[in-house]
Structure formats: C-alpha cells, structure tokens
Image (tube, rainbow over all chains, first blue to last red; front, side, top):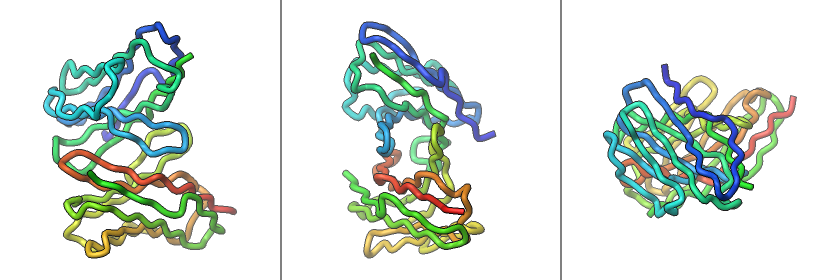
Length: 113
Length: 111
C-alpha cells in the first residue's frame, strides 16, 4: 500500500477561522512533508518532518503551524490566513530523511475568503 | 540552492506520436531526478526517476535520460495515448530531502 490520505478534500474558511489539515500514511515512512501548490504552478516545499521532528521550515509564515503527533500522522494548523493562501496543500512521505521516493497524497483544496 | 527549468510549458501531440520534455538544473550536487504526472484534482504521481550514477532508465513507454555534464535530463514518452494527457513535473533533489520542481509541462494527446 503506497497511499497517503488527506482530509478534508476541500476546505473553505474565513480569515478569522482556525482549521486543521490532516495527513496519514501507513507505509512506515519516517519523513513527511507539506507542500503548497498554486494553480498552474509546481509544488513548493513548506515543512519537512523527520522521525517526528521538524527538520526543515522553508520560512513559512507563523499562521501555518505543523504538527507531527506520531509517525503516521501529520497536521497543518491554520489560523488568520489571507486570501493569497488559497491553494492546494499536498502532503507527502518517504522512507526516511534522505530517501529518494516521495509519495504524494491527493491534496486539500483550501479557499480563504 | 537549486534552480530547475522545464520546457516546453505546453506540448500537444497526436495519439501514437512521441513526446519529449526537457529539464535543466543548476547545482551539480543534485543527485536524484524524479518525474511526476499530475492529473486534474490529484496529487503528483511518480512515474519514473533516475539517479546521478545512471545515464538512462526505461519503463515500458517511458524513459528518462540524464546528462550530468550538461546538467540536463529529459522525459521521453513513446506511443502516446489520450490518458497520458496531464501536467508533468520534473524535480531535482538537493541537500537531502529538498526537492525543487520544474514549472511543469501540460501535455495534450489528441485522439
């Protein structure tokens, strides 16, 4: 099973709301990633977790807060977002930090009003 | 850091023809080059990859070539089918698990 699941599929939120995106994998992977993808653009790395610890933060604004409760789960907490944060948020995982192959989830389509 | 350039941005071919997408990268330290296919409303799916110690790799109708000296790699799809229509991204791995993506190529295969 090479599946990464993400919930919800779609999310609409106001600028004052607090919401969370969830990602789950059961492949035993120890590295997990959040990417942001704007329309007609490539994915852009946001965060990398390795063995449940944050290893890379690509200077992401603090209104995005990642969390890795255990080796199978990855959350992205959202607070006070701006309309320009509307995008497809992709989660990915790989065997470990330094492994080649990344498996992507289907993404959460986020719209900020 | 790394910079990946991808061409063309759009490619339209007739069913059965071949399609070639090219990417260049800037940092010679990059050592792994995956290609992803992304269909509308879905996440990227790995279709083929190549490591820096290999010059060519083939998987059925899909092949990738790597020229380390020139710092470019290409995706070749033969006998294209309508279901190959999608956006294709190349990527280069730099500094452990930082992946830099090309800008994408929208491939349209006309029946």
